[in-house]
Length: 278
Image (cartoon, rainbow, N blue to C red; front, side, top):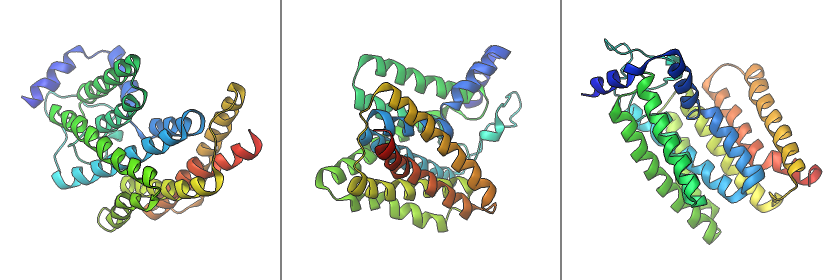
């Protein structure tokens, strides 16, 4: 039944749909979320940027752990199923990381904005990313359904922990997420886990430093917001690429590289924006 559903979705195969669904599935990948979270944090709503960031990181860690535990095979190579964009299919099949990430991102936005248009956009985006994983032959239907359910659960849990930490002014409560993630580095010796663990640590340290010493304010003119985006994203891309060249090619370097990226988004860029782009 699972295979037949994928085959049915793939009956519409054409160059147009190949391009369309590959573009759609890219909205469920790391680069999209890093850029989107940075834009929200720097230019839209700082608190929501933190909350969204922690939700995405929590969800990604949960996804990696579940994939390793369940160890379900992907439909890649199954007779009658064509698979595209295989290079992005890291780890095992259940749950779908792209679908879970899209669900985490858009459900977080829906909860925050609470407007009709965001319900439509968010639900449509989740559905399209889910279909894209079937069309590209990278997941079974159960994987995308599991991704949706687990994504929603991660948002609920992460939001509860973050809101409690904010309301009680007890940032240490977030260690409930941080400590297990860092301990997991001894168990999950793979690049993806180390990059996420690095981002988690950088994000947490940045959250503490920014909340106590920087106190960054998002409000600014449209021109200055554009300046922040151009400068902030340019440095972000430069840091990501430069550190990859400078540091040795191993998972510990990946961890360090993403610690720096987390710090840049949460405290580095805000420091510069506050001083030079008011």
